[in-house]
Length: 407
Image (cartoon, rainbow, N blue to C red):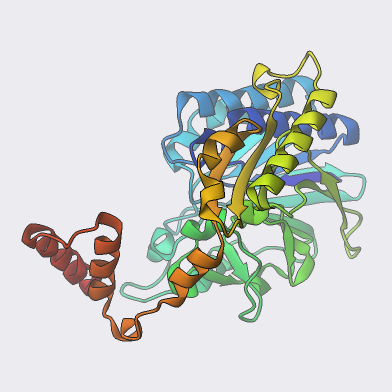
């Protein structure tokens, strides 16, 4: 049985001020083209389909178009989806009964009471049946009623309880879709800036990967960099597009999994995904960065085709770029943005790293290490606003510190 594994589409996401919808349409089309070429039996989407719990109408349209194309162009394909922490369970579940008639199965919440269990989909191939378990994003609070009243539970215990109730038959071939932060013996997988907000401070949301060791394949979502977690058959597919500059060196892909008979290892292949626009950083003097922009723009004009979207035909470098200027003479940086925008279409940020800025970081207040959180915030406020807080503002912040301490 051949499987495709993707996750963390984050449809509707912005990168700084830029709407990424055209890039997302492009990579979704790339996924469909790969599926038409490879003819998988199952497409697994491991959560965070949308970027916000209340997606825009445009985001809905993008995903609806994707599903419609999948069902029309790949009518034999079964689609399995789970909700991630960014998804709204209620909105994602809408029309699930109708979608199931088209071989599209969605699970949005874990079992909350004793009578409920995970959604399980069983499919067959030449070697027999394969059981797919759909485990959407799970917090301890979601499954608290499965434990005795008043018991404090960890994230690992929450997932473990959900799985042990399924009484999974280890003699069968089993696959799981899960959207959690899995770690191995305290070793934390590689993370990116674009997902940090989703990972709890202190690592309290970590789940022990040993819970998944018995599955023929574990299709994971949540982390944006594709990688295995201890076992080759336990994998994060990563995002299909780069959502931060910290991902600039990542190779985005669809994970293709081929299951053989029980007892054999899954065959895993990474199928590259490409986008006309990249996300990357550029560092150098203003002249060096301008030269790099001109060269990128020339390559763009050479590769332009009449069937490309209008925004791709601007005659500029169309990558999303973070720029760091290193000129020591600040006078050379006058009107730097205007000059850079002549050659770079989508500038994420412009930073200066020279003797002056490095000297500012070296001017550290020796008392900083002893500041309380509120004192640190007061200094930050003054630096940002060039004034001290008013009594009213200080009173508001004092109440916030108190509420934070209580929690």
